[in-house]
Image (spheres, rainbow over the protein chains, first blue to last red):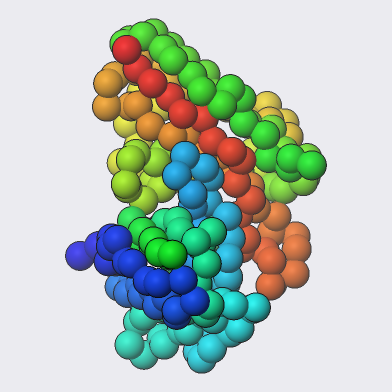
Amino acid sequence: QKEVEQNSGPLSVPEGAIASLNCTYSDRGSQSFFWYRQYSGKSPELIMFIYSNGDKEDGRFTAQLNKASQYVSLLIRDSQPSDSATYLCAWGGGGNKLTFGTGTQLKVEL
Amino acid sequence: DAMVIQNPRYQVTQFGKPVTLSCSQTLNHNVMYWYQQKSSQAPKLLFHYYDKDFNNEADTPDNFQSRRPNTSFCFLDIRSPGLGDAAMYLCATRGLRDSRTTNEKLFFGSGTQLSVL
């Protein structure tokens, strides 16, 4: 079983809609979770991180963590064409390593 | 100001010809990572340094080596590149001396896109 699973997409949403991205993980020892955005040919950039169960909001972005169900999600409100990118979920299970999912490609259409 | 700098941005090498990718950082972070990312795949950790301690991933091929001569610099050496080694190579750093809210945040460089002919 893959450690971090994401739907590869593409996920298409109209401009102004809410985009919902999901990620499931297998290691119950996971402590911290991250969402990175990656534009084509560029390096990943951190969008959000979350440690505790529940929701964490930052501007148009909300991360949701449910440790019992082993999933983490990212909501993007008022989606903009500039949000079109691949979104990588990552988890840190202690130590110094982050494990990445394969990413979900998001397309925001005009 | 760039904090994690990778050179070159694009690298073309020949099959079997050794190549070195470089990474430098101005953050004084004690952890440095090398990830390999192929098209439409997740970044895959090759190895990382915690200060001078080298940590190799079990499935990293012997063809890949790394050096960290000081805190600021880290190199990735590919001894005999094959066609399957063509990928984006990402260097990242992390400062474990920071507060808990930032201590697991990775700072990525812009990456080096390696082509093997």
